[in-house]
Length: 464
Image (cartoon, rainbow, N blue to C red; front, side, top):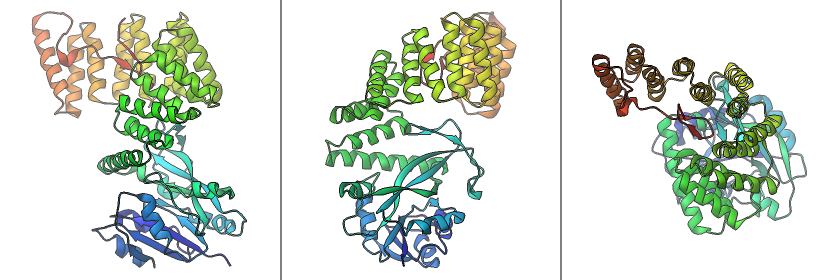
């Protein structure tokens, strides 16, 4: 009869560990927990659930720590979870059914819960949460990816990779068979507190740098570090260098070409972005995101008709309101004002929470010279997605109309929410001065016209 072991590495995970271990109660025949230096009650919590706890020195190498834990397992099947993950107890029978199969391991879908529907993980967009797991119901969306989390215990199956480690390469490298699992792992690490996420990002960045130092010709390692730099630190130039190096090492690496294009968009290198996106497509990497990126590049180059064509191609693969909004803006810029405004309003109606949808409507009205409409749209964004920048922008447009009193009202409302924000303090002082002197356009730093940026990172000034 097949036996199942849960194998984990942990450190200072007392708050997450209990829900994780509770989720495998009655399923795991054996629990082995490798502690890498906890100073809280992690080990006590693990033992309370019947785990065998071993101490493993931390050497900045996830694979090494996981292999040390794996060496202590006696069961013939291994399930791997992190402390901030759990199973759905209603799927235990699915897990058990997998233990009688002939394959060596399973690619398991991991649901990474996120705080809003506009987030992505690598190149994967978020999906609306269907609320199947009680603990996850308060989160609006999740992003899925796959990894080998259930596999046979065999001497040749080991974890590889200092970071983003997996047993998958050793299973596939031996010519053995992987199947796709019917159950899922639920991951809550992306909805942890901001400081905890920041600490983890810094940690992964350092490990990624060490991984490249050890494996300088590993395209995947360069790509992984590029994603950390791009998504978590907004070091776009460094990220672009990582993506380009990954492409040099593996010219067929389609997703690396795609992210080279996306990073170039942020850097406003639109011609290069278009070239990289075409290279991704030529290597068989076709997705809504590829066509959207091409559209963003054409937009940056002010080739609005080609941008519209690319956005339409993206829309055939994805009905995203953001894409509808982008298409509307380029149609308007290409001369079809009525259709463009209709799409922009439709996109905002479908998803009022997307800041980019608001931004593009503001840009459209400003481009058309409709400052009153632009101001109304900016105030709507200010109400739905408040930020110091949103208040300043709405006030800036009112100031261009010389509506000083309304501009000051907006900035003072912003100060009630963000009382220590220097840009708002400077703006309200400038507005009070202008109200007393003369109706001239504001020039102070606090009230300078704020560029409108959409979700792809391209910019249009409020008037061209």
